[in-house]
Amino acid sequence: MAETLLDYETEAAHYDRTRGGVPRAGAAAEAVLSLVPPGARTLLDLACGTGLVTERLTRPGLRVYGADAAHAMLRVAGGRVPGRVVRADARRLPFPDASLDAVGAVWLLHLVPFAAEIVAEAARVLRPGGVLIATVDKDAAHDVGSDIDTVLRPYRSAGAATDRAALITRHAAAHGLAPASGAHFTGHGQGGTPRDTVRKLRAGYFPSWFPGDAAAVDTLATALAALPDQDRPRADPRYRLARFVRQG
Ligand SMILES: C[S@@+](CC[C@H](N)C(=O)[O-])C[C@H]1O[C@@H](n2cnc3c(N)ncnc32)[C@H](O)[C@@H]1O
Image (cartoon, rainbow, N blue to C red):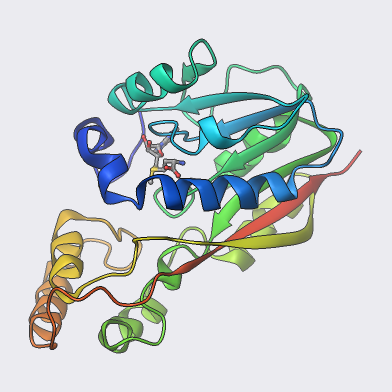
């Protein structure tokens, strides 16, 4: 089962409403598709969640599948892309070796301590010339340049994000995946407020920043609560998608 601090079995009920909804999902899908090679016939949306992105990954001739570890998220996804979603841990995918043209993973690698295993598994299921497309440096994209960022940044840089671009690139190289050009998308509606950032910190949204350090969370919560305009969202983040090509 997925080892994430956030419980996606309970998140499913309000996930779409709280993650930028259709505008964010549309921007993510468009950016992923821009990195899928023109002749690709299959794309696996890894950690597809509720399928809000998955159902927008449409292109003539491209068949899209979804996989996720959480039952509740998949139930929603199953309604959106019927018959094309499967419950699976991203480390053990029910696809044969070299069977897919593209694997996408939007907002997954920052959540788990085993990103290396996920990259290895993606490399296994990709055919030569196939691409892995994944968000990297996800949490670092939040609130850049804002007063929230000023409070959080010292902790962020001290953290050990599991989706650091340099780290994922190393994992990829170890499994025959070479870096290629990537893309960005706007996290519509994802600009944080001080009050909501405190809530997210306490709910475990940023697991890589404070591994087990409750005192650091308390210190940050106090600093964030002192900021002005507690409920005014700061600028929307720009998330980065990295791309890697499976070598023959
Ligand atoms: C932040 S959500 C992203 C969902 C979707 N990609 C999107 O952009 O809306 C993270 C998803 O990763 C899934 N997940 C976490 N760990 C996983 C694992 N080891 N294998 C498969 N899915 C996993 C969760 O169940 C959740 O649906």
